[in-house]
Figure 1 (cartoon, rainbow, N blue to C red):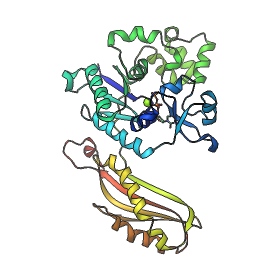
Figure 2: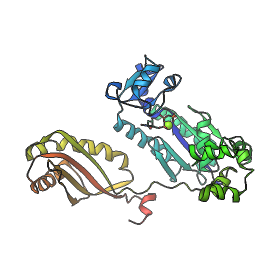
Figure 3: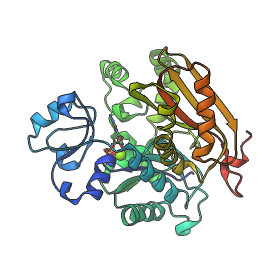
Figure 4: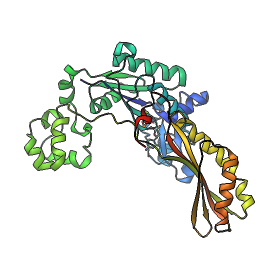
Length: 351
Ligand code: DCP
Ligand code: MG
Protein backbone atom coordinates (compact mmCIF):
# COMPACT_ATOMS: atom_id res chain seq x y z
CA UNK A 1 0.00 0.00 0.00
CA UNK A 2 1.47 3.38 -1.01
CA UNK A 3 1.40 6.58 1.04
CA UNK A 4 0.68 9.67 -1.03
CA UNK A 5 0.37 13.24 0.24
CA UNK A 6 -1.27 15.93 -1.88
CA UNK A 7 -0.15 19.39 -0.76
CA UNK A 8 -1.97 22.58 -1.82
CA UNK A 9 -1.22 26.05 -0.43
CA UNK A 10 -4.23 28.08 0.69
CA UNK A 11 -5.15 31.06 -1.50
CA UNK A 12 -1.51 31.04 -2.56
CA UNK A 13 -0.90 34.45 -4.20
CA UNK A 14 -3.21 36.19 -1.70
CA UNK A 15 -1.52 34.46 1.25
CA UNK A 16 1.86 35.82 0.14
CA UNK A 17 0.46 39.33 -0.29
CA UNK A 18 -1.08 39.22 3.21
CA UNK A 19 2.19 37.90 4.62
CA UNK A 20 4.15 40.77 3.09
CA UNK A 21 1.63 43.50 3.89
CA UNK A 22 -0.19 43.16 7.24
CA UNK A 23 -2.67 45.91 6.26
CA UNK A 24 -4.23 43.52 3.75
CA UNK A 25 -5.04 40.87 6.36
CA UNK A 26 -8.49 40.11 7.74
CA UNK A 27 -10.37 41.92 4.96
CA UNK A 28 -11.45 40.76 1.48
CA UNK A 29 -8.49 40.75 -0.93
CA UNK A 30 -8.16 39.80 -4.59
CA UNK A 31 -4.94 39.42 -6.58
CA UNK A 32 -5.26 40.20 -10.26
CA UNK A 33 -5.54 42.82 -12.97
CA UNK A 34 -7.46 46.07 -12.39
CA UNK A 35 -11.13 46.22 -13.42
CA UNK A 36 -10.59 49.27 -15.63
CA UNK A 37 -8.18 47.24 -17.74
CA UNK A 38 -10.63 44.33 -17.86
CA UNK A 39 -8.51 42.36 -15.41
CA UNK A 40 -9.49 39.01 -13.88
CA UNK A 41 -9.12 37.58 -10.39
CA UNK A 42 -6.11 35.23 -10.19
CA UNK A 43 -7.10 34.31 -6.66
CA UNK A 44 -8.65 35.86 -3.55
CA UNK A 45 -8.45 35.28 0.20
CA UNK A 46 -11.10 33.39 2.15
CA UNK A 47 -12.75 36.61 3.37
CA UNK A 48 -13.40 37.53 -0.28
CA UNK A 49 -14.71 34.05 -1.07
CA UNK A 50 -17.62 34.70 1.33
CA UNK A 51 -18.85 37.23 -1.26
CA UNK A 52 -18.81 34.59 -3.99
CA UNK A 53 -15.59 35.86 -5.52
CA UNK A 54 -13.37 33.22 -7.15
CA UNK A 55 -10.44 32.68 -9.54
CA UNK A 56 -10.99 33.66 -13.20
CA UNK A 57 -13.91 36.01 -12.35
CA UNK A 58 -13.82 39.44 -13.99
CA UNK A 59 -12.41 41.95 -11.49
CA UNK A 60 -15.31 44.28 -12.31
CA UNK A 61 -17.79 41.61 -11.20
CA UNK A 62 -15.77 40.94 -8.05
CA UNK A 63 -15.85 44.62 -7.14
CA UNK A 64 -19.58 44.76 -7.69
CA UNK A 65 -20.07 41.84 -5.31
CA UNK A 66 -17.78 43.36 -2.72
CA UNK A 67 -17.25 47.15 -3.04
CA UNK A 68 -14.68 47.22 -0.19
CA UNK A 69 -12.53 44.60 -2.00
CA UNK A 70 -8.81 45.33 -1.82
CA UNK A 71 -7.00 44.60 -5.09
CA UNK A 72 -3.28 44.05 -5.66
CA UNK A 73 -1.36 43.18 -8.82
CA UNK A 74 0.39 39.83 -9.02
CA UNK A 75 4.12 39.61 -8.25
CA UNK A 76 4.99 36.44 -10.12
CA UNK A 77 8.68 36.48 -9.29
CA UNK A 78 7.91 36.42 -5.57
CA UNK A 79 5.36 33.61 -6.00
CA UNK A 80 7.91 31.59 -7.95
CA UNK A 81 10.47 32.03 -5.19
CA UNK A 82 8.05 30.96 -2.47
CA UNK A 83 7.06 27.99 -4.62
CA UNK A 84 10.72 26.93 -4.80
CA UNK A 85 11.01 27.30 -1.03
CA UNK A 86 7.93 25.15 -0.47
CA UNK A 87 9.35 22.50 -2.80
CA UNK A 88 12.65 22.55 -1.00
CA UNK A 89 10.80 21.73 2.25
CA UNK A 90 9.13 18.80 0.43
CA UNK A 91 12.54 17.54 -0.64
CA UNK A 92 13.54 17.06 2.99
CA UNK A 93 11.03 14.19 3.11
CA UNK A 94 11.12 12.58 -0.34
CA UNK A 95 12.60 12.89 -3.83
CA UNK A 96 9.38 11.58 -5.35
CA UNK A 97 7.64 14.91 -5.92
CA UNK A 98 5.27 15.74 -8.76
CA UNK A 99 4.51 19.47 -8.90
CA UNK A 100 1.11 20.23 -10.46
CA UNK A 101 1.41 24.01 -10.29
CA UNK A 102 3.29 26.62 -8.29
CA UNK A 103 1.40 25.76 -5.11
CA UNK A 104 0.41 22.13 -5.51
CA UNK A 105 2.26 18.80 -5.56
CA UNK A 106 1.97 15.09 -4.97
CA UNK A 107 4.54 13.49 -2.67
CA UNK A 108 5.11 9.75 -2.49
CA UNK A 109 6.33 9.11 1.08
CA UNK A 110 5.97 5.32 1.04
CA UNK A 111 9.70 4.89 1.67
CA UNK A 112 10.21 8.03 3.75
CA UNK A 113 11.96 7.59 7.09
CA UNK A 114 11.16 10.95 8.74
CA UNK A 115 8.52 10.96 11.51
CA UNK A 116 8.87 7.16 11.90
CA UNK A 117 7.53 6.90 8.37
CA UNK A 118 4.10 8.22 9.37
CA UNK A 119 2.58 10.09 6.42
CA UNK A 120 0.16 11.86 8.76
CA UNK A 121 3.01 13.20 10.89
CA UNK A 122 5.07 14.13 7.82
CA UNK A 123 2.14 16.15 6.48
CA UNK A 124 1.73 17.89 9.83
CA UNK A 125 5.44 18.71 9.99
CA UNK A 126 5.47 20.05 6.41
CA UNK A 127 2.49 22.27 7.25
CA UNK A 128 4.12 23.52 10.45
CA UNK A 129 7.34 24.33 8.61
CA UNK A 130 5.58 26.09 5.72
CA UNK A 131 3.78 28.23 8.27
CA UNK A 132 6.78 29.06 10.47
CA UNK A 133 9.49 29.31 7.79
CA UNK A 134 7.48 30.85 4.93
CA UNK A 135 4.53 32.56 6.66
CA UNK A 136 1.73 30.98 4.61
CA UNK A 137 -0.54 27.97 5.18
CA UNK A 138 -0.85 24.70 3.32
CA UNK A 139 -3.52 22.01 3.32
CA UNK A 140 -2.74 18.34 2.84
CA UNK A 141 -4.54 15.13 1.94
CA UNK A 142 -3.05 11.77 2.88
CA UNK A 143 -4.23 8.59 1.15
CA UNK A 144 -3.05 5.41 -0.57
CA UNK A 145 -3.29 7.01 -4.05
CA UNK A 146 -3.25 10.33 -5.93
CA UNK A 147 -6.98 10.53 -6.65
CA UNK A 148 -7.96 10.17 -2.99
CA UNK A 149 -5.10 12.33 -1.66
CA UNK A 150 -6.21 15.19 -3.92
CA UNK A 151 -9.82 15.02 -2.76
CA UNK A 152 -8.66 14.73 0.86
CA UNK A 153 -6.56 17.91 0.71
CA UNK A 154 -9.76 19.86 -0.03
CA UNK A 155 -11.64 18.29 2.87
CA UNK A 156 -10.31 20.48 5.70
CA UNK A 157 -9.13 23.42 3.62
CA UNK A 158 -7.88 26.03 4.55
CA UNK A 159 -5.02 25.18 6.93
CA UNK A 160 -6.07 21.60 7.53
CA UNK A 161 -5.35 18.02 6.65
CA UNK A 162 -7.38 14.87 6.18
CA UNK A 163 -6.36 11.23 6.11
CA UNK A 164 -8.10 8.44 4.23
CA UNK A 165 -6.89 5.11 5.61
CA UNK A 166 -7.11 1.97 3.47
CA UNK A 167 -10.02 0.61 5.51
CA UNK A 168 -11.93 3.90 5.08
CA UNK A 169 -11.65 4.05 1.29
CA UNK A 170 -14.83 2.15 0.62
CA UNK A 171 -17.11 4.32 2.79
CA UNK A 172 -15.39 7.49 1.67
CA UNK A 173 -15.76 6.85 -2.05
CA UNK A 174 -19.37 5.65 -1.92
CA UNK A 175 -20.71 9.03 -0.85
CA UNK A 176 -18.65 11.03 -3.38
CA UNK A 177 -20.52 12.75 -6.23
CA UNK A 178 -19.24 11.43 -9.59
CA UNK A 179 -18.29 15.02 -10.42
CA UNK A 180 -15.36 14.65 -7.98
CA UNK A 181 -13.80 11.83 -10.01
CA UNK A 182 -10.62 12.63 -11.86
CA UNK A 183 -11.48 13.17 -15.55
CA UNK A 184 -15.24 13.51 -15.04
CA UNK A 185 -16.24 16.90 -16.39
CA UNK A 186 -19.62 18.40 -17.15
CA UNK A 187 -20.21 16.21 -20.20
CA UNK A 188 -19.54 12.87 -18.53
CA UNK A 189 -21.42 13.95 -15.39
CA UNK A 190 -24.44 14.92 -17.50
CA UNK A 191 -24.38 11.58 -19.33
CA UNK A 192 -24.17 9.70 -16.04
CA UNK A 193 -27.07 11.77 -14.74
CA UNK A 194 -29.24 10.61 -17.64
CA UNK A 195 -28.47 7.05 -16.49
CA UNK A 196 -29.71 8.06 -13.02
CA UNK A 197 -26.23 8.19 -11.53
CA UNK A 198 -24.88 11.04 -9.40
CA UNK A 199 -22.85 9.28 -6.67
CA UNK A 200 -20.06 6.73 -6.76
CA UNK A 201 -22.29 4.30 -4.88
CA UNK A 202 -24.73 4.44 -7.81
CA UNK A 203 -21.88 4.28 -10.31
CA UNK A 204 -20.81 0.97 -8.80
CA UNK A 205 -24.05 -0.66 -9.92
CA UNK A 206 -22.85 -0.45 -13.55
CA UNK A 207 -20.64 -3.28 -14.82
CA UNK A 208 -17.31 -2.53 -16.45
CA UNK A 209 -18.80 -3.76 -19.73
CA UNK A 210 -21.64 -1.26 -19.57
CA UNK A 211 -19.21 1.54 -18.72
CA UNK A 212 -17.01 0.65 -21.71
CA UNK A 213 -20.03 0.62 -24.00
CA UNK A 214 -21.04 4.08 -22.72
CA UNK A 215 -17.68 5.79 -22.25
CA UNK A 216 -15.19 3.83 -24.37
CA UNK A 217 -11.62 3.76 -23.08
CA UNK A 218 -12.56 5.89 -20.07
CA UNK A 219 -14.93 3.11 -18.93
CA UNK A 220 -12.41 0.92 -17.06
CA UNK A 221 -11.00 3.98 -15.34
CA UNK A 222 -14.46 5.04 -14.14
CA UNK A 223 -15.00 1.50 -12.88
CA UNK A 224 -11.79 1.70 -10.85
CA UNK A 225 -12.21 5.25 -9.53
CA UNK A 226 -15.71 4.41 -8.27
CA UNK A 227 -13.97 1.81 -6.11
CA UNK A 228 -11.20 4.13 -4.95
CA UNK A 229 -8.57 2.45 -7.14
CA UNK A 230 -5.93 4.65 -8.82
CA UNK A 231 -2.60 3.13 -9.81
CA UNK A 232 -1.05 6.29 -11.28
CA UNK A 233 2.54 6.80 -10.09
CA UNK A 234 3.85 10.06 -8.67
CA UNK A 235 5.86 11.32 -11.64
CA UNK A 236 9.02 13.24 -10.80
CA UNK A 237 9.21 16.61 -12.55
CA UNK A 238 10.29 16.28 -16.15
CA UNK A 239 13.68 17.60 -17.03
CA UNK A 240 14.00 21.22 -18.10
CA UNK A 241 16.19 22.03 -21.06
CA UNK A 242 16.42 25.78 -20.65
CA UNK A 243 15.23 28.80 -18.72
CA UNK A 244 14.76 32.18 -20.34
CA UNK A 245 13.28 35.65 -20.09
CA UNK A 246 12.34 38.08 -22.82
CA UNK A 247 10.96 41.57 -23.13
CA UNK A 248 9.10 43.18 -26.01
CA UNK A 249 9.78 46.92 -25.86
CA UNK A 250 7.04 49.53 -26.04
CA UNK A 251 9.13 51.38 -28.63
CA UNK A 252 11.76 49.67 -30.79
CA UNK A 253 15.39 49.97 -29.68
CA UNK A 254 17.00 52.00 -32.48
CA UNK A 255 20.70 51.21 -32.03
CA UNK A 256 22.99 48.47 -30.76
CA UNK A 257 23.86 50.83 -27.92
CA UNK A 258 20.17 51.01 -26.88
CA UNK A 259 20.03 47.22 -26.91
CA UNK A 260 23.15 46.88 -24.77
CA UNK A 261 21.62 49.18 -22.17
CA UNK A 262 18.83 46.66 -21.58
CA UNK A 263 21.19 43.83 -20.73
CA UNK A 264 21.57 44.43 -17.00
CA UNK A 265 17.83 44.53 -16.37
CA UNK A 266 17.29 41.37 -18.42
CA UNK A 267 20.14 39.61 -16.66
CA UNK A 268 18.66 40.50 -13.24
CA UNK A 269 15.32 39.07 -14.31
CA UNK A 270 17.06 35.97 -15.61
CA UNK A 271 18.83 35.40 -12.30
CA UNK A 272 15.56 35.59 -10.40
CA UNK A 273 14.05 32.94 -12.62
CA UNK A 274 17.17 30.80 -12.49
CA UNK A 275 17.54 30.90 -8.73
CA UNK A 276 14.83 28.38 -7.79
CA UNK A 277 16.28 25.91 -10.33
CA UNK A 278 19.89 26.37 -9.28
CA UNK A 279 19.81 23.47 -6.80
CA UNK A 280 18.82 20.93 -9.40
CA UNK A 281 20.44 22.18 -12.61
CA UNK A 282 23.68 23.63 -13.85
CA UNK A 283 24.22 26.05 -16.70
CA UNK A 284 25.51 24.46 -19.91
CA UNK A 285 25.18 27.43 -22.27
CA UNK A 286 24.05 31.02 -22.64
CA UNK A 287 21.81 32.31 -25.41
CA UNK A 288 20.53 35.62 -26.71
CA UNK A 289 17.48 36.02 -28.91
CA UNK A 290 16.74 39.18 -30.86
CA UNK A 291 13.59 40.01 -32.82
CA UNK A 292 13.96 42.91 -35.23
CA UNK A 293 11.29 45.40 -36.31
CA UNK A 294 10.78 43.36 -39.49
CA UNK A 295 9.82 40.42 -37.20
CA UNK A 296 12.89 38.39 -38.16
CA UNK A 297 14.16 36.49 -35.09
CA UNK A 298 17.66 35.24 -34.55
CA UNK A 299 19.38 33.35 -31.72
CA UNK A 300 23.04 33.12 -30.78
CA UNK A 301 24.25 30.49 -28.36
CA UNK A 302 27.53 29.82 -26.60
CA UNK A 303 28.49 26.76 -24.56
CA UNK A 304 29.39 28.00 -21.09
CA UNK A 305 29.51 26.54 -17.59
CA UNK A 306 29.68 29.94 -15.93
CA UNK A 307 27.54 32.98 -16.56
CA UNK A 308 27.90 36.70 -16.06
CA UNK A 309 26.50 39.83 -17.74
CA UNK A 310 29.73 40.09 -19.73
CA UNK A 311 29.01 36.82 -21.58
CA UNK A 312 25.76 38.17 -22.99
CA UNK A 313 27.22 41.42 -24.40
CA UNK A 314 29.17 39.85 -27.28
CA UNK A 315 26.30 37.45 -28.02
CA UNK A 316 23.87 40.34 -28.30
CA UNK A 317 26.30 42.17 -30.57
CA UNK A 318 26.65 39.10 -32.80
CA UNK A 319 22.87 38.69 -33.05
CA UNK A 320 22.35 42.39 -33.84
CA UNK A 321 24.93 42.29 -36.65
CA UNK A 322 22.77 39.86 -38.58
CA UNK A 323 20.17 42.54 -39.49
CA UNK A 324 21.50 45.84 -38.13
CA UNK A 325 18.09 47.41 -37.64
CA UNK A 326 15.75 48.46 -34.81
CA UNK A 327 14.89 45.75 -32.29
CA UNK A 328 11.45 44.82 -30.90
CA UNK A 329 12.41 42.13 -28.45
CA UNK A 330 15.45 40.80 -26.60
CA UNK A 331 15.57 37.49 -24.76
CA UNK A 332 18.26 35.89 -22.60
CA UNK A 333 18.46 32.22 -21.72
CA UNK A 334 20.50 29.49 -20.10
CA UNK A 335 20.78 26.04 -21.62
CA UNK A 336 20.45 23.68 -18.64
CA UNK A 337 21.64 20.26 -17.64
CA UNK A 338 20.95 18.31 -14.47
CA UNK A 339 23.24 19.19 -11.56
CA UNK A 340 25.91 16.58 -10.96
CA UNK A 341 25.55 16.50 -7.20
CA UNK A 342 25.63 13.16 -5.40
CA UNK A 343 22.20 11.82 -4.60
CA UNK A 344 20.50 14.16 -7.03
CA UNK A 345 17.61 12.27 -8.61
CA UNK A 346 17.72 14.12 -11.89
CA UNK A 347 21.41 13.48 -12.45
CA UNK A 348 20.62 9.77 -12.64
CA UNK A 349 18.46 10.28 -15.71
CA UNK A 350 20.05 9.99 -19.15
CA UNK A 351 20.73 13.33 -20.84
N1 DCP B 1 -4.37 30.90 -10.34
C1 DCP B 1 -4.57 31.80 -11.38
N2 DCP B 1 -5.68 31.70 -12.19
C2 DCP B 1 -6.60 30.72 -11.96
C3 DCP B 1 -6.41 29.79 -10.91
C4 DCP B 1 -5.28 29.92 -10.11
O1 DCP B 1 -3.74 32.68 -11.59
N3 DCP B 1 -7.69 30.64 -12.74
C5 DCP B 1 -3.18 31.05 -9.47
C6 DCP B 1 -3.53 31.87 -8.25
C7 DCP B 1 -3.55 30.88 -7.11
C8 DCP B 1 -2.62 29.79 -7.58
O2 DCP B 1 -2.70 29.81 -9.00
O3 DCP B 1 -3.14 31.48 -5.89
C9 DCP B 1 -2.97 28.44 -7.02
O4 DCP B 1 -4.22 28.00 -7.50
P1 DCP B 1 -5.24 27.21 -6.60
O5 DCP B 1 -6.29 26.68 -7.50
O6 DCP B 1 -4.53 26.24 -5.71
O7 DCP B 1 -5.93 28.36 -5.72
P2 DCP B 1 -5.46 29.04 -4.38
O8 DCP B 1 -4.20 28.44 -3.87
O9 DCP B 1 -5.43 30.51 -4.60
O10 DCP B 1 -6.67 28.75 -3.40
P3 DCP B 1 -7.02 27.39 -2.62
O11 DCP B 1 -6.93 27.76 -1.17
O12 DCP B 1 -8.42 27.05 -3.03
O13 DCP B 1 -6.02 26.35 -3.02
MG1 MG C 1 -3.93 26.38 -3.68
